[in-house]
Every structure is written in C-alpha cells, then in structure tokens.
Image (cartoon, rainbow, N blue to C red; front, side, top):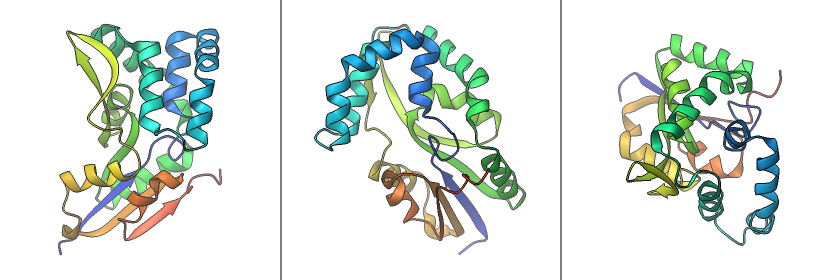
Length: 200
C-alpha cells in the first residue's frame, strides 16, 4: 500500500447549507415559477418521500419540465453564473477549512454528487477539486432533461468511485456525507464523517 490519501465529499447538505438543484431552479427560473412547478409535482414528490418511486425518475421529470429543450450553451452559461454567484454563499465554512486541511496533508480531493456536472464543474475546478456527478443528456445541442446513464446517488456513487480508483492503493480513504443515501460511500472509507460540518 502506498502513502496515497483520498477524500470523497458529498455536495448537497454536506458541503452546502442548501440543495443546489432546488437553488439552481430558483436562480434560473425565479421563485414564482419554482413554486408553481413544484406544486405541479407535489404528488410525485410525496411518492418519492414515501419511497414509492425512485429518486432519478422524479428528478428527470423536474429537469424535463424546467429545462427540457434549452440550448446546451444557454443552459451552461446559466450554470456557470450560478456557480459563481450562488454556490459560494451556500458552502459551510467548516467544510472549506477541512478541504484546505486535507489539501495540506496531500489528499486527493473529490466531490461526489447527485447534482449535475453542469452547475458544479466551474466551482469544483476553481477549488482544485475532482468531480464525479450526474450527467445530463444532450441531443441536437439541447438539454433533454433526461439523465445520461444513472443518477449519481446512493450505490451509484460507489460504482463511479470504483470505476476511477482502486482504493486498496490508498493508505487513507475519508468520506463525508449527510443522508442515508451517502452511507454506501461512507462504508468505503477508512474514516467516515456523517453530517460533519454543522457545528458552525
């Protein structure tokens, strides 16, 4: 085993105080459209809460409703503006302290998120973090609202991590999460942290 070290961070709720998917919709569409849209999807959201439908099915319906057919370039510009303006105030201060502490200890740092690559990439690149996240389908230069492959949630996080890294090569594996869906990823780690940055 080498002296390599790696840390995996869930994004929404772990690094942030709010859900970036919901905040992005509000940022791009406005609060009124956001509220009206979610009233429309209330039965689906209730079914999701009761575990009657899968997470990715509801997520796709919401994405199609709000963003289906939008030119990819326009969508990406909106995502980059969101990453610049809205994400920084959402990040928990203690999370940034931990990221910098681990960076000094020469950890590889990876964000693993069910949110879309589109609105996380600019922020993660700016902090020098690697990113594994949900990919959105593009056809004929337009966002369809459908997920490409699988939603990066629950066990899919573990699959994506194992596709990129042989964790047996690492002396230390840290993982940070805040929901039961993060527990498969937390189980990979030599040290895991559940809801770690909420003391501030």
